[in-house]
Length: 90
Image 1 (cartoon, rainbow, N blue to C red):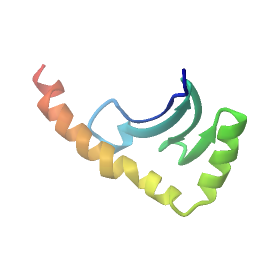
Image 2 (image 1 turned 90 degrees about the vertical axis):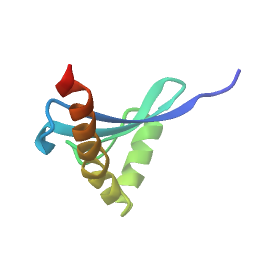
Image 3 (image 1 turned 135 degrees about the horizontal axis):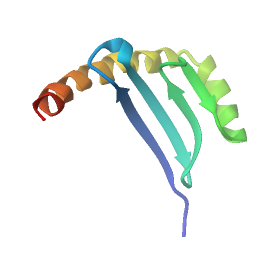
């Protein structure tokens, strides 16, 4: 009994080049994706009525700029480390 709310931060990549890397932050309620930010789109996108409402508000908030920088801050940095540590040696 109860509800499940979760958030995932994902880095998608084909190489260590910044142009081949995307940051995606998704929010779920009871396993249903309600809203996500995709660095390739540059804004939040809603998938439910509640998600559309939140996406509109979050896209108007100055903090959306921070999400746009997450690709560089989080993904580009970590993809290089992970690629060199694991993928390049396999």
